[in-house]
Image (cartoon, rainbow, N blue to C red; front, side, top):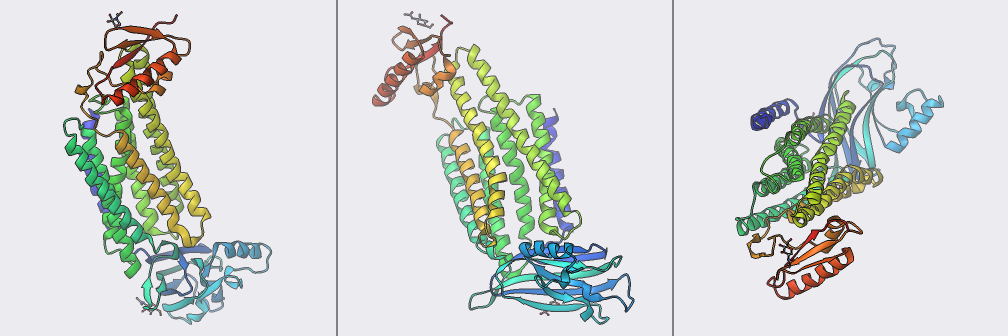
Length: 490
Ligand SMILES: *[C@@H]1O[C@H](CO)[C@@H](O)[C@H](O)[C@H]1NC(C)=O
Ligand SMILES: *[C@@H]1O[C@H](CO)[C@@H](O)[C@H](O)[C@H]1NC(C)=O
């Protein structure tokens, strides 16, 4: 079957990712960008949230212009810092023909213009930014048909407290290493708890439960790498290789999480030991898409918005992500459909209906999780001030944590069923399951443990179940056991 190829193709894809990573040199907040024969009028570089002690180090070398005529007004070529708001005003000014070039505007902060070069091929400059705000470093080239080539090293940082240590993390992100480390500890404890549960319930643990353990471990490792990555960037401006580990673990985590959602959705291993062909197809779609999503994520993070195809990668990522999120919902919908059909025809309706409720809940929770982490977090990041950017990260991570906790709790290994010796050896259905079990106006039958049967409508059955549940819990599980069947329409 096609699915049996998965491990090997996964492995080769992993190698491909590592290969691709070794090419993208990652310097994170200290960024090296090579501009080659570029005639774009505006090239945005990095964004950074400055505090009142912000600094921008700009080292540009290998400058060469396609036109070296001395008549050119090189004051129209250079670097400046601008906030998003002032950029809108600058565009307005240009539209109103007040100015012809963004560098002439008095709203932007000009860092360096090329008329100061005086024939030199490189320059270094240190710009002090005392206005706390989120700025974008932009290169403007207002001379038409002038192509510029140069190697740019840009480093933006804030001076930290009295010690004047460099803090290379943007003002709203400087808390992130601690946040990630705390989350790592939480997932680490969750992993420990899960191992304990697996050990206690080892007789009823399915393969999927070990798969869940793998997902938690990968998530914890991913967070640890992210914490290290961010803390190295914070102190030195570069990730010292932790970003590579981070990408590898996010890749593995992304694939295993989506696979887990699909597997749980299909009921694999706890409802049935096999996957149907259409369910395998979902996996065959989701896994390669996750690979593409991860490659896009790496390119987006590492190249920064100055790269020409940055927007394209961003769109690829969004598209792939949306397709993945939709695809994982199908198996859950199929399961719900199957369970509902089984419940209508099968005598073991109560068990099926409990699972049906579980799957319906899971469907809703998956949708909420996807919606929250994709839409709400994005909205939060857009509306919060740059200084509180970390709140978006925290909100997204808390939602993820809740999702993991819910999945683990609802699909935990169950207690052995042998103690329930009811007529049908099925656990007691919960009262709210009656809506699925017995349609309005249709009678159901209660078979009691003592062999007597009682027929009644939905309201009667619900009352009967409630009273039996009370007596069950009072007598510590040894009381009367009952099973409700759906009787034929009267
Ligand atoms: C970059 O420029 C700054 C400011 O002039 C200077 O202090 C720093 O040493 C330069 N860095 C490199 C790598 O040239
Ligand atoms: C009650 O229903 C069960 C299951 O249909 C049946 O086996 C049993 O004989 C019935 N008991 C009485 C007393 O009718």
